[in-house]
Length: 252
Ligand code: ADP
Ligand code: MG
Image (cartoon, rainbow, N blue to C red; front, side, top):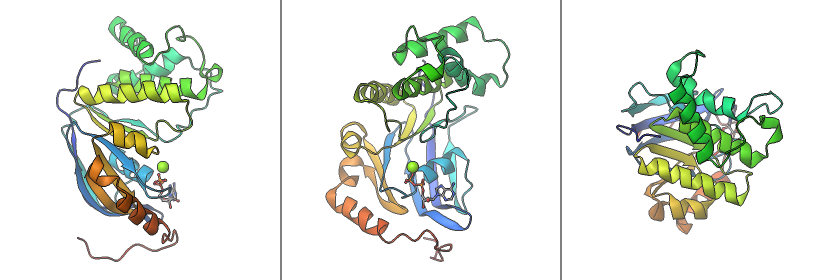
């Protein structure tokens, strides 16, 4: 796939996101630098998935704003947490990967030869050569995740958001997919991934955001994922009240 022309930058200004009157991410401000590779980490329920939904536009901020510069006419590649794929639906690996074309073609018109080649290369890049005509119901969880990564490759977006991409998959699949993420980073795309594995985040992600409903730390991973910050995040997670009303704190 070709490198992104210009990487998008995401500016988050005093954003509060939530559901039906209950805040899940409070007063978050910061910047996801163009072309950066950022791990979003934090305890369960700390608002990581909510933040990604806010960036994608699936959830509208209650306060504040999220601005994405440099996306141009491109679309965002977003892999939700435990993507809700109906594996009984009889769709092949090739068809699933081809769905990545849709955001650019905007129609299910004919797929050109060049596009077909692109899909073939993506399937090969995720290690699924020979699986093109297999239907998803015959694949393991790790193989399905590989197909979803092939779809991201085909989509060729300059902004890629992944929510716990290595959850419940085998070690060798995780290693292969981590290499693809690094390739996207080298191609100067902007990549944000919610990560459960803190060691992997420390080793492979230059930047990190530690969330506990609000920002605990954001910046260079070595300065963000520290024992002191993790303790602080855990202490905050023990105080969460899901029934709390909208926070009344003054905007900062
Ligand atoms: P994380 O991804 O860090 O585990 P989430 O962003 O999924 O956390 O959730 C943050 C908070 O928002 C939690 O309290 C969760 O219960 C709540 N929440 C998440 N999704 C929904 C939803 N669709 N409706 C209502 N509340 C939700
Ligand atoms: Mg989540």
